[in-house]
Length: 119
Image (cartoon, rainbow, N blue to C red):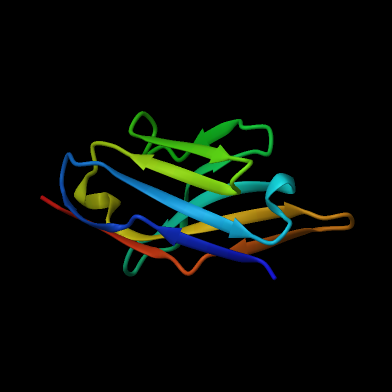
């Protein structure tokens, strides 16, 4: 059974840092591009960062230069290092696995972790 479990959220001040983790169980990690998405209250979910199976990252414009996504393949974990946090980064952050199966791709989601940044 596939499970994505996020951790590391919390409440911080503007300018602080946080590191989110997402542990993936089930035999999908090596064939999954991993992503971090976020959803602020009253807004649509947006892509924060994504990392391919080969480790190539890309970022949403609002977080470029501040956030870094990485993956630990042996431990089936993906990280999001968030530096210089701003109040507009406040949202629920979701981990996503975009699994490339034999016949189709499947998206798996974590339960989300709250990040609150106060000014």
